[in-house]
Image: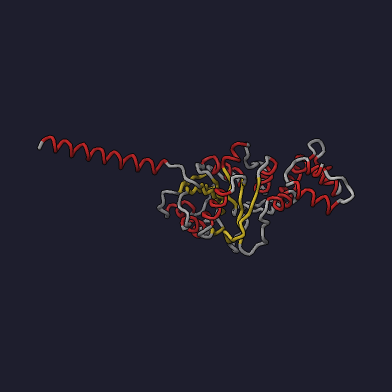
Length: 297
């Protein structure tokens, strides 16, 4: 009887150990996705953004929320959601968009980082669709989704890259990217930029050899009542990014890139190998058919 009692005690101890280990394992398990959202003075809009993430059909994620020094009820709004996947951080003061995005990325543990804005609403299948695409296409560094009611984003890398050299045609809060690619190439948001930091970030991925794609389906909707609150000049920020583009092609004379004619620009672009040979040839045929194309040499 005594031996039997001892055996039962050992079984219970072992079972308790397994339960404790399993609970600790679940807490420490690396999530597939890190959702990165910064917020500032938008407490009234936060619920729809947060709930749209917590309602995703894909559940293996952590939700990093960075409060960029808000003075409204943001703390209380976030505290209302009792979900262990939420990781909430508050900046000591208003640090700006790029700083907050970098902080979120540095805290991320997921294989993929999904960007979310506090005035947007992600559709339930968004995360599932973007994860599935990246899992099936190991050559793609970042995948966007369409934004409801806005112009459609090209779905293939060449057309996306062609647009990025001119403006941000890829978006931001509709994108999921590989954390490992950004880490490998030391890609971070430029904290000197007060705006267009997302465009600059995609260009860094592009010039590091990253490939882009976009899903055909809508993945989120914008809040039409949203207003800008950082008081920034997009014209000034865009000019700074364009200067970076010029420097990428002509380090010594960045302004000369934009001063060059179409054929001159294409010859410089062809040296970066950011397009497929076929697409590069197509651009040469359209813009300077009489010129010799480096794409076919």
